[in-house]
Image 1 (cartoon, rainbow, N blue to C red):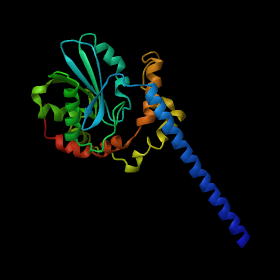
Image 2 (spheres, rainbow, N blue to C red):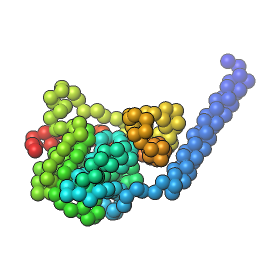
Image 3 (cartoon, rainbow, N blue to C red):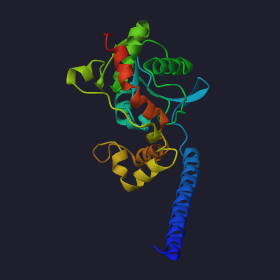
Image 4 (cartoon, one colour):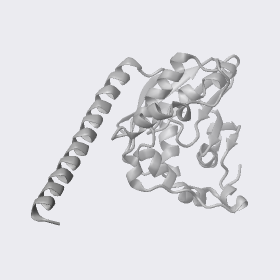
Length: 256
């Protein structure tokens, strides 16, 4: 290749790289600005309580004899919105509480490890800070079955019952002969860089609940899309995924 052609090649390459970098930078700025706007437009449905100096979102409905605490599955971006149809039914005769753990919904992110010990202590602190009286009926979905098992064993006097919604139980991996999933840590930048927002634009149905039309209101679905853009695969969710094996090993000997 001649010197002239080499020079032209490197100029084109440099300009292409600069264009890509500028585009990425503009997109990230746009994402952060839009996130700030949406967070002001869609304030928390419930109350924010202080846990370890950060905010945790708790939504309550109903005032019945039993207090049911709904705990979401792994990666459910907006638990308070996702559980809405179930909340409405249960709240007719019960007090229903949804705790959005760190990294979910309107709750903050945290720098603490996503160990079962930390998650349960944060959950318990949030309930106490919100003045939710014991005992609770824990209603875990998916991975929250692990946390409910630990909670019920460590604080049995605070748990009246556990009602599983297709929960993950500590011995499930061994029973089915499966290994715990893992994800590379860099995936935790998906929400920060706006990749999650881009994904909600490309295929929004992947980030909405699977339900018959009319099950969720348009307002609910609009907020779910927005929160998925803020929180989809953030660092806490990725850490939680990578902690599954350790959390399963810690709770495998436990029983209800």
